[in-house]
Length: 422
Image 1 (cartoon, rainbow, N blue to C red):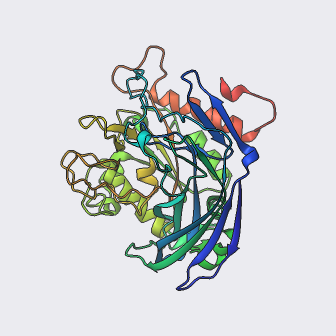
Image 2: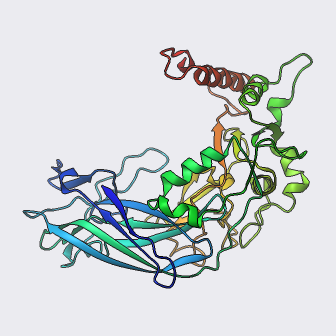
Image 3: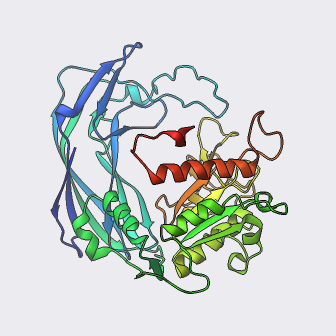
């Protein structure tokens, strides 16, 4: 697939872009159930259960921080594929317990509809902010459309997009400073994210970059861990000591803190007040603390240490087929993004981070998750405190094992030594 920037005229007329697809990169197979399945380079596939499974792709563009795309105009140049097809329906995913599902039959209404699916070749799926104030609009592109009654499949050679802008009600967040060591990482993230890199210099927000910020609360690398792994016996070594020394040798300023220390810290007071309604549990307080230090003190990297017994946040896919069983998805995006609202509906059931079909639940309004991050997060999973699996290391030893492997790898990636995999 080739993405071509055609015009970049901002103002009342918006901007225009073009997405091109190469039919030589399209493949078709017939599966054991005699349905056709399509694959197209650089594409995923549609997700709606029982509907035709067709290639699709999300493309993203940076736009002015104080604007949004209020109207998307689309024009398409198409080719009709030879022959007729019976396209495989999207199957019900497996649930958390690993049970296999029976075959999901084609949706009877759609498969008897004499019209192309999807109806549109392109649609806006989100307005998000990367690094607080870099406004990104994401467009879902459908290079193939299918008429189930006639069996005809239409291939889009070229999809032209025209954006019309209006003011947005969303509020960007402007971080005040950044450590110089982290600036290239944010640059790479943004340039790899969008299809219009030539517009970045016009629309991007860049905080002040400092080689060595020296405020008492200025640090760019934070480790958050449970209290028990820092409950040390006399003479016992901090399990993070080697890792912290290594990161500081590489130029990071590292801070180590526990979940409970954050929960009682003044910078976390009142919990997660970033959205419509408050979330005042430990995870909510952690998010508030992280947002403060990213916005004011140059925080860019967070290592979260802990397992299922430690503070965690779940997003909830409100899958329409199982109204009493939303799919819980562990998600550290909660700690990495500060523009999203994870409690838009004051949900007494604590289904924070709801997305998907909410027609059966509460007021039918999903939470407003922003899928682009402000922080770079990672996690070290620890064995559970209660009933750890047989043969598991202690939680402190698990940290030391991980640290040794990581440092071994970072000192010689690609050198042929694979000791870090042991």
